[in-house]
Length: 128
Image 1 (tube, helix red, strand yellow):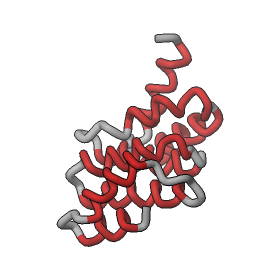
Image 2 (image 1 turned 60 degrees about the vertical axis):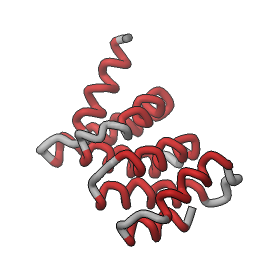
Image 3 (image 1 turned 180 degrees about the vertical axis):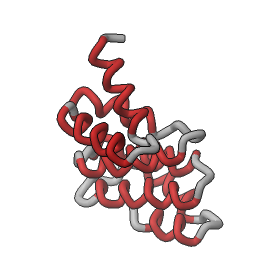
């Protein structure tokens, strides 16, 4: 890993820090380094043991209009167990999917989520 990659990882980890100022500074830094941060942000979505981080990353990817993260968001929504986090992930995916062409693999993944036992998760999945 390069020094810049290490710094990106530090900022990503700070997204679920206790201090609001720490989270805000990390978000601003990641927005400033968006191109380099995108791949690492997408990977962070899968950290199921850190649900707040996944939610913060989803919102950041949404702000970055990262349509390439669409499949990662849906995959993370299927993997996470926290209902509120799953909804945030799917809401970000819905926002990013506006105008995107339908990917057959993505449609298959969302079909399972559309039948989810959590009505809010199912509702957002049906919008994809």
